Image (cartoon, rainbow, N blue to C red; front, side):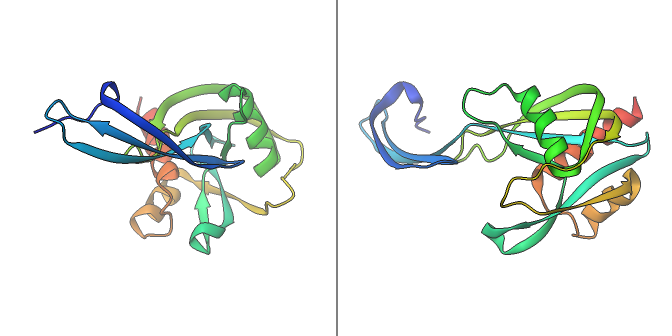
Length: 180
C-alpha cells in the first residue's frame, strides 16, 4: 500500500476562496512516482454546545439548513470567525441561537467533522447554569429552541429524528458525563 502524505506534496491549486470555506486541490506524489489529487475544504472550525437547563435536560434547536433543504434538530453550534478563539465563539453562539448564557462551562473534546475531505475541527462544550438573556440571531438565521429530556433526545437519534452528526456526538458525550 502506498501512503500519500503531506510530506509528498507536489502542487497546491486554489479553487475557491469564500467567506465560509476555501477549496484547494493538492497533488501528492508517492515514492514510486504515482500521483493523486486530494481536494480539501478549508474551514475555520466550529463550536458545538451541549447546554443543560437541568441535569437531565438538554437544549436543542430546530433550524432550516439550505444545503439539505430541510429542518434539522441540532445542538446549538456555529462557525469560529477567523482569528477567534473557540471558547468566546461558543459563548456567542449559545446566546445567538438560544437566548441563554451559561454560568459554568466545560470543554468536552474536539472532533473532526469530515476528515476525508475537510480540515474543520469542532470544539465541543458543556454549558450549565443557564440564564435567559434573549436571542441575538444573525440576520439569516431562525431557530426554535426545544428543552428536552436527555433520554428523549437520545431516543430521537434511534428514531431518525436527529440526524446531525455533531449533535449525535455531543449528546453521546453528554450521556457519558451523566454516567460519571
